[in-house]
Length: 432
Image 1 (cartoon, rainbow, N blue to C red):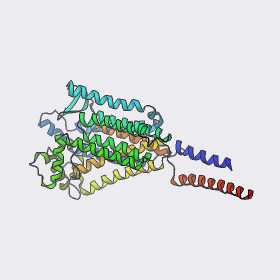
Image 2: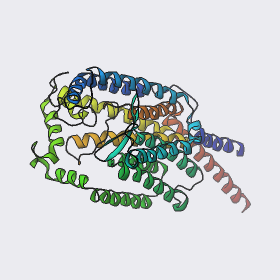
Image 3: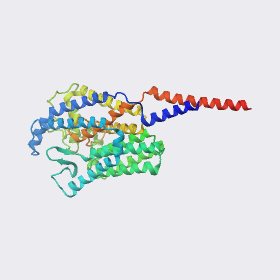
Image 4: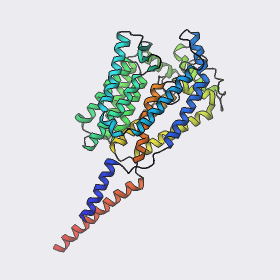
């Protein structure tokens, strides 16, 4: 009997540490992502010429009509390579270099601030409204270090929490909680204060919180952490005049108009979505993309999608995001290896935070903040690192365990312990 119990316990331990035997990956991840990317290419193709004309008229360059679709197509090609590269690179391998990946993200952010804000080296940095957020890569485009920082935080926190989880130290204040809070504080200082990017700071927090929830952090500790984050968020809004203006605009709601500069952006976003009606104005017929709606090709692309494809089109897009995120949650639930489970949970937090914040801002549910809509907004850096993160999730999907198998291991282990108990008590009765 002891040998049978030992086999059951060893099987349960191996299931938790290594996960199930390798099987077919979840190809629906590729399907949903590919559909979103194709929609993104269609909208960039449709409004790219309008965006180019606007920039040419204000003297910000000499762009051809095909400039943006070519750049986006190149970004998609690189993102696809990153996805399959991550799908074949062992998760355990990248986690071994988690400190290096995180350090690269932090150092690149510091370097950007030094070259852009302090030394004003315009040849290699791109700044706007007093904040420098991009490196300029001559002949290629721009690179946003904040996206590398998100990727670094994802990899580091997954490995860090998995190690603490195995040691039973997830709720240890000194060895787990305070180091993670310190990491978030450093990263938030880089992106929120130095780069004036609150949206990215929120996304970083959500990535870490998602992994923390899955790791089983004590409810009381979790509530305290959330209260700290809430207070910190309020303070970050209070110390920044432009964020206070956005908050005031949000609180005024429908009282704003296009004549008010502070509400100009969100008002035109609502006009774009409302103009789309049920089925949209059609591809290439967007009015707001012709210079009315700021950042139409980037942060405001959801509004342009609503104008182009209408309510029905937006419902389809929301369903694709829902389906993708649901598959990621499924993988989180079925992954027995802590490294895999936490990494997938972080990717869920990353993508969901971008989707929720971007869409909620465009329809007026939260104050306006700049953050990209995954796979749909113009820009290669965000797509590159999100694609790489999804590549790891795709790889992890090969090692999930069926729910019935998890229940079978638990039931078998429990029944074995009960048999041991009955034998022991029976022995005691015979001795009386």
